[in-house]
Amino acid sequence: MLGPSRILGLGGAYAGLAEGVDGVNANIATPGVRAAFSGRHVDYDLTASVSLPGSFASTDFENRGSFASRGEANASDFIYGNAGFLLQWGPFGTALTIDATSYKLQSPLGNATSVGLVRAHAIVAWAFLKYQLVVGIGVQGTTLSLSSASFFGSPLPLPAAPSGVAPEAGVLLKLDDQPWRLGVSAHAPVSGGVSNAGSTTGSAFVFPSSVVLPGQITIGFALQLGPRPLNPKWQDPKDDLDPLRARIDKERDERARVYSAELATIPDGPLRKTRQRELDAREHAIRRVEDARMDAEEKKIHAELDARFMNWPRPRLLVVADAVITAPVGNAVAVSSFLDQKNEPYGGSWTVSPRLGLEGEPVINWVKLRLGTYLEPSLFDGGSARQHFTFGGDLKLFSWNFFGVLDPTTWQISFATDLAPRYTNWGISLGVWR
Image (cartoon, rainbow, N blue to C red; front, side, top):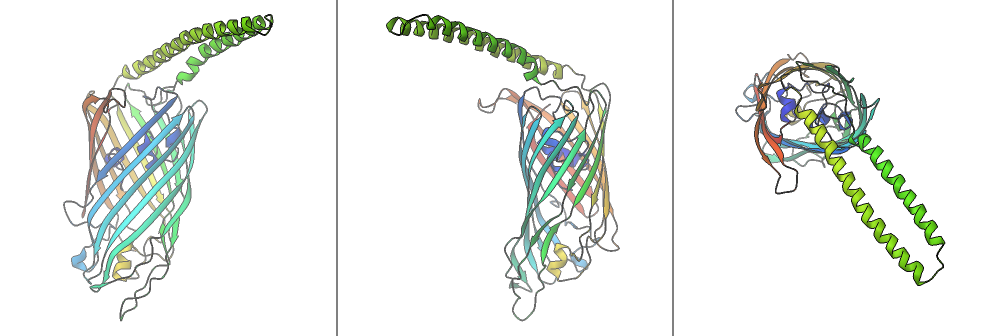
């Protein structure tokens, strides 16, 4: 399970929460979900993080239950990174995210290659029933590259990186003032064809016909205990501002009618042109006052919504649970099996990965902590699942306006770790404290 630090710390269980741009990794409905702290008609979110799986030890990244010393390829030099942008406009939301994983594979047979996987999501979403039901649709694109390959010590010619796209969709139910949420997200399988790159000198090398990212369905549930609300009714500041805007527009239309009627009584000529200039100057002055009034009212509404969020009690315990269901892929082998040229059945049956996470704030308004666990099924025939345990948190830092580009913003540094037999992962990220 690879993902942004908050999702990693929660053991990958996030489809039922689906907040912020990070949530795109778990639920495609995320761009349309208004977080409690969002107090603007037009809002946005950014993310960027990096993690280093297997940085402390050899990594059994495919859960083989064995290492290179027992005859299979071993992975090293793992790095995972992600970045994303989310834009919300009233009930509409859109997001673009990208994540990349790279590592090296080394086989005792002398075979080696560098593997790179890049995934991107382009999503649109819409909130219905006054932001209580959110539906999102999009496409996922992937590219897998194999480079710097050698077979028995000789360079191995490889085909161009196979790429593909497939649809995806998600839904989230979050009823006002209820302490729970329910989400479902689905990704169709992504497949990219591979052209035969020939064979190595003196020995045929079998290439796959395609590379497949399996289809998945994720079902998620979130429950928040304590005085802090999980689903406060979201108030669009535009709705509060519209009555004043409508009144001002009506007054402007009425003035325009009066000005036109007056000018109609004056014959064409210098006198009419002089009066036209006088009325234009008067209207310009009035509109400056009206615009200032609109700006002041908008700032007042925003301040009230910000104060509403800031004054909510902070103590809470968030409980999240997911079930990630992965579809089978027929006649498939793992990347390491391809490198070893072993026809080992892989991913040929349905699997379920249960996930559970807890999040709280032990030091109010300064420190958040997370615990999580998930079961990683083995995709090899006869393999055993392994249990992962995750831990993470956020530390509040300082307020900064990013060289004057943003409003004064309080920042945080986040971290997460993932521990399992024959596997370690850790990562850090910088974000906004909420």
